[in-house]
Length: 279
Image (cartoon, helix red, strand yellow):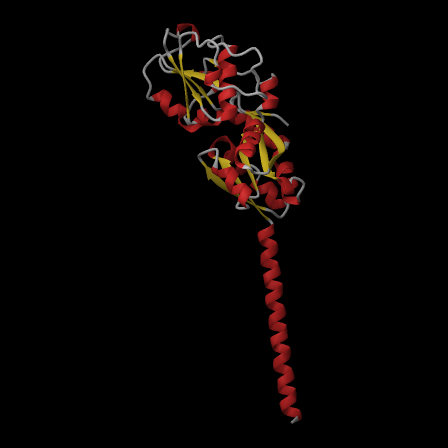
């Protein structure tokens, strides 16, 4: 009887140790998962910039996972749903407009860089050459449409209401005087292709990241926003997170890794003014 009891106790002890081992393994796995920072980003320049901080985050015990998106909607819906820990592709006016339209609760955690909007031409080397009735293609989403129209007004190509501003927002319907030009708003990521396939004499206002992806550079632009002006602060590209995660350890680690001299130097050396660090 004593021998049988000893066997039962031994088996129970083995089972207990095995269970403990599983618990510890599970806890370790969970800990590793919690040290992964999953960030949604546009391929250029955002994902390229994020690639530069993988090692510094690894040195802090984090694994950076970058998920590439080619539009301006999915990275926000994925962040809101919890599929991502953060995203990095947009400026604050767009983020605020997206929240208002979709009931999301996303906030900027830090400003990283600014991409000056540029006007590019098909067969046009100077805006003074723009013919009467020429087509001007601009991005159609709320904040970028406003930004494009403000740049066109800056260059004297359209007249907007006196109170037009980034905060208030304007669309093509608000144009007071199109100066005889045909201003067409299309989905932002299609603007470079629309320009490339357009009739000669067409111009387009293109987001910085889409211009880079299309092989265009600020030096190719017929006009560009002043990176030292109000637009730089208003339209700085930010790391966005869920409101509850703004001060989380992951968010702080990601921002700290991005806002370094090494990242600043990489941006300045790589993009030749098409992307400007703003930290």
